[in-house]
Image 1 (tube, helix red, strand yellow):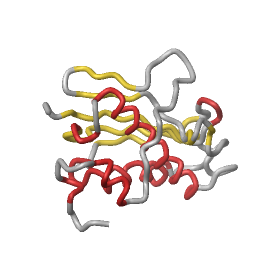
Image 2 (cartoon, rainbow, N blue to C red):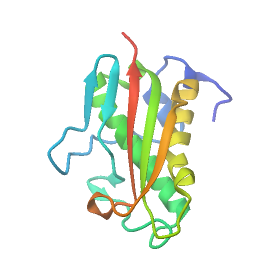
Image 3 (cartoon, one colour):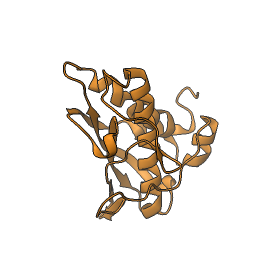
Length: 164
């Protein structure tokens, strides 16, 4: 990891992902009537992304019951990678991301589970490692009864694009 290094520069975001041992996935196809991401003005809004890898859901069930908090945190990281793929698909590249503005994370929670913020840290920490200061964002972490496909976690984000 870098001590503040290129994550905040306008260098190649995908090269930074590779440094972290990560690869941007293909855009996950929608499971209903929506598109993965939309550009309006200088912003990209993503649809909620579940932890699909190669078209398969990485986990199912409630966090705090069938899914442990650490596993859910890793699933949130996968959701964030899927959201970045959606951003790239409409932005022309991740190097155009001037700032991650907002992240909203949903956690399918067992009764009594209150660790939603720690689960969604998986997404937030990834964005910080990839974008540096540009990855610091506002955030909500919400517990819900159930998510599409019985996914444990879903993440959406809003990013601001630079002109270039």
